[in-house]
Image (cartoon, rainbow, N blue to C red; front, side, top):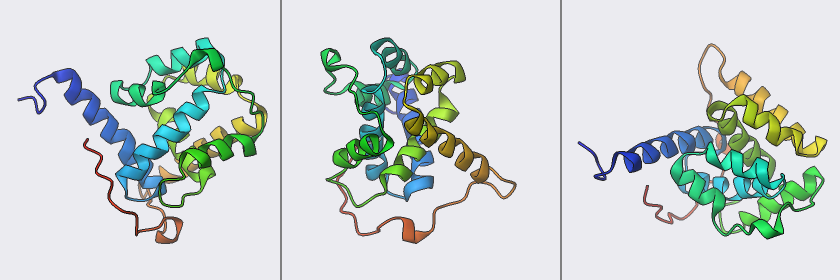
Length: 174
């Protein structure tokens, strides 16, 4: 029996939870923060690649994540010209001001890792090639971390010092 009454909603909820669980493995156990992280990193990435590449990436995302990706998007402002890693990470940090403190590079690598696992490589290659080299380096770092976390003992959780535990519950209903 369907939990929502529509199979498409059930599937996107399940898939979104998989993505959020993967992100929380990297950044800490708060799914609310993981949702905000997706909402910061994906649009930052979207806004830095050509329109056609951004739209093709959006088509590969789960329905619920796709809504977050396109939220408040104005294609006429596309693409933004932040060309350095620091500008990219600064934009991510700016979008995460309302959450508990997180390292923008760590959360970006966590989202890129989820993309690596769920989006076809051909599409990701187009996105990576559209980014400046120092931003592309974040993607290589996320791939290396994914390889390390998939070692024989299975996925590892971050040490408690990498994330704060006193974040207020904000009530995301997924």
